[in-house]
Image 1: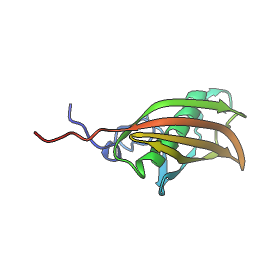
Image 2: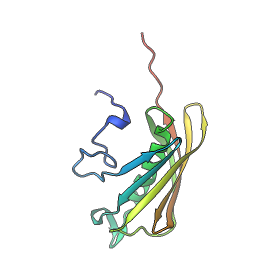
Image 3: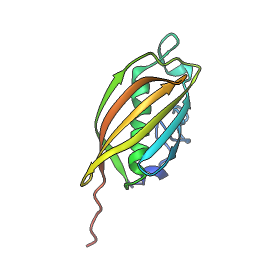
Image 4: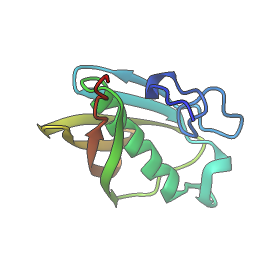
Length: 137
């Protein structure tokens, strides 16, 4: 299988525009930061009117990944901890803010907050590992 850069892969369930079943999340990257915006659609609910916790986690993961990708090459989630504070309602927009909080070699420490109606609904911390560069020869 040919490897592509994260930013070039179009079939990602969360951000890929080429995935017909995906979420099609949009993100903006800053220097060690990101902002993910998305309309919480009903087809992703867990209970009536409430966004599924796995989707909440995916949004937090995406924001932390984009924050890491703003200062690193390809990376992957190594660890993630999520705290659900309040239900996230479907049919309304969410904003997820991710930030790199530290780095040790190829390991990036991150955090994210999911905000809806000006209120923090879920928070996460994570660790991302940057891909090792292959040596020629």
